[in-house]
Length: 123
Image 1 (tube, helix red, strand yellow):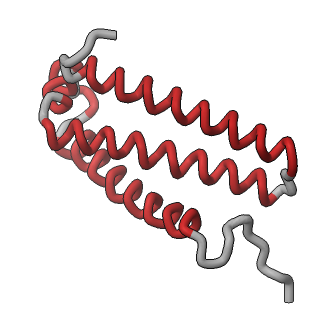
Image 2 (spheres, rainbow, N blue to C red; image 1 turned 135 degrees about the horizontal axis):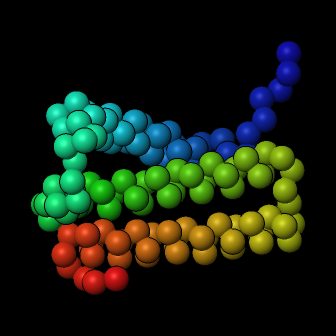
């Protein structure tokens, strides 16, 4: 039988958080599809409706949490895929740095966009 190989350390928290974020993303995506494809059909959705939703603290907070969760889940998945392919040494460090900077840029721009959409801060 083949040995199981994973870049996640046994008992490590990154493995657990990858699964927790996946479950959260499934729930939030289900909410998104229900709200924006069944409650409101695509031809009914306007920018003003979307802006109105973003001005509600609950919805705004959920979208920020979605941004953080999706960013972590995606970057952690890509990083571990690279590790599974044998990335080590300087390349591993460079990948970690590039992915970390990319994550920061995505999060900062995502929060700025959400704030502007909610009417808080102009871009």
